[in-house]
Image (cartoon, rainbow, N blue to C red; front, side):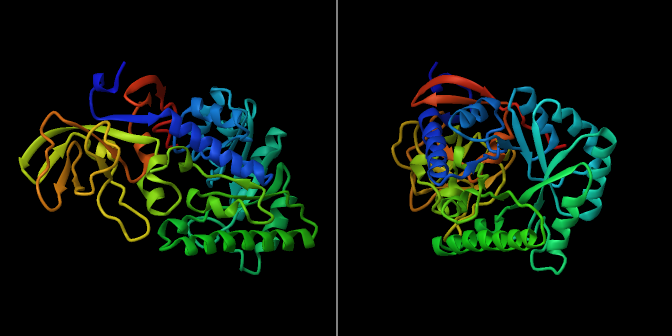
Length: 374
């Protein structure tokens, strides 16, 4: 089947680009002796997860317990949830522990005690890492607080828990204004974790793992001493944001949205059938503050994007594209491809993606973990 035989909008994944992205990141991690544990929230596909593990990844990360259940059922053997899972999910997690090696993060004393009690009742031991705030100010303990090392010591002493190490996400990298700033963020993240780990070891707490995770900073984090694990996710597909942050080239972007021109109200305005239900409403991020909702290739085989086409506005089913500086030759019925701002959200909006090689469909991948928000 050819992609021209598919209805639109349609999410396409270029197989060769995907495989090259997986190979490149795994190669970088392996060359430094660092474990790669990709975050599966980008593809949400057990098939892609198996490809990552076959290349050398030690396991995957999932955002929610529901995602982990999907991947465990598919036979993925090692799953980490770098998300503050509440002990109210203890029964589900215990069931998961019968199927895969499971680890979670904690950053609050009451939550840690809750997990300790649940594991003690079940006579089980759960691997945990302490989540550390390295500047994103979302989750994690404050590493500069007087009680930071004491928190690690207290978690390590809890029955039913096995402290593996410290973990962070430098999400502030997505708002960096330059490559130099991204490198500083990665360097600071690693230094914070190394210092905290050293403080814990000084009081007798074993810290085996220093785990960091973000695609924009991964190329710098891989060179940081002491880092034992990388957890990037978006690198599998890449997107406009990663291109704008210098983490990828446009030709690395494996995921695109194929759309059809459905209206041309004016020579300098067309409408595509890929609205927010397909492209998502996530804003553009990156150096230079890009705007709009994606990069448009004016044709299915166009080698370069058309810089005049600006996805200015989205409704649920409509993408309004303005033509800057003139008119476009695109007419209703013509098809285009759009590199979205954020590939991870696009994956979660569709039941399946088409794995393609050029214009040829080679397989259909179920987005098996989509919608697993609890």
